[in-house]
Image: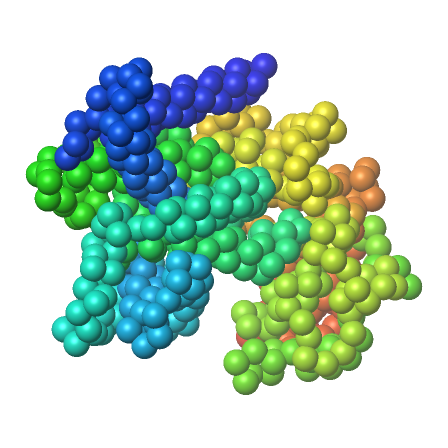
Length: 336
Length: 254
């Protein structure tokens, strides 16, 4: 009886948290639609002035486009990192610390310079790059100790970032706008990208929850989980594939910024404990919310200029993360 | 022949010959103890049985079926394995931890059913952990964690139990309990138990058959009281054991 109460109260708790976060996201979404360089008036909708109406609709569409993109990208990045952290049992694994984002970005820029690319191509390259980055990191680190993985990842990441900067120095003028995406700027993102990334989210997130059902076995050691009947390699590989697809496709939105990938899953874990599916769900919401908030603030604070959402994220998440760290961290490490 | 059969099995790990041409038959519903000095290949044999390693040469059959023909899940239903060192995940209560042992009996989407809960409670009870069932497993002492691991294995409800030095970290009373538990499991639940032990007293107390290993070969096998003799011990550990061992077998016989 005790047990059942415990579980249901925990579930209620998480449900409440999800509701709260969704409400926040809703508020920020609506606020983001209304505020910006042009303060949107509700009036035009009620009036019959078609020109103002068209303008308003246009602005609305533009903003909605960005906001959905921010929500999807932030959420996907956070969920992907949460999966990777669970797989490696290492809360410090973030997409930028394992070289995933930087190699992805490197590939995207290379392709843009050499060939010119489409949104679909960018997403594909992002996915391939992030897989490459992580495999390279794991392969080079050999012993999968926490410190080794992180150190190797940082090395790969900095090398790739240096290469990116080298490319940027030599880059032809016409892609300088395009390079804004590195800092996580969403203003150059096309509606085509938005549609594709929303599609990716809708495909991948259910997959995450299907895979997450038995994710707890990764907390066990490998021999034990094999001996209780887990097809370990297959399960691990499919989780890794999904994670790198999530992170790779979010690259077009978040660029070479991975701090969100450390912050969101860790906050989620402090709030709801170790249950994998709750962690994934909360990571998505927290990541999405933070990135959306960053984009909206970056757009509004210094308008008509813009602070790229990636930079803004790093600025606003740091205090939030510190607050959560000091308030909710009770010395429980998820893995040992 | 029922039971587990090793036929001409050789295994190499990091260019070192661990097992050379081992033939071994483990009888069903018996307790078999593997005895030998460190590095004799005891754990390797257990891992081969559990399907965690693939032998370089030779065949392993489980109830007359080649072990390679089992899927992981099917193998886990038949056979459970407890490694020497295991990591106890933080953030899981003992009950949740033990529940993971039901993995092979569940489909991917199903939650724990009535019989799963019954098996979990029974396993926790057998491992003498009822008092700690709702505590976090990682906060328990080493011996209690070891028992939690044993409970996970019991929750799997397989016919074959492979235990790699299960006595590590247990106090005298718990060693005694585990010994009685294993004997009872064989007697009342018809389990086949293969266990690596270093304490020869315990081997004599519970084993139906002792297998002595040295440097990847089977030195001797048979009734524990007959194979644990000064000669075997001396060739196994390169140390004159005669007085102590003689005395013990005598008191054992009386």
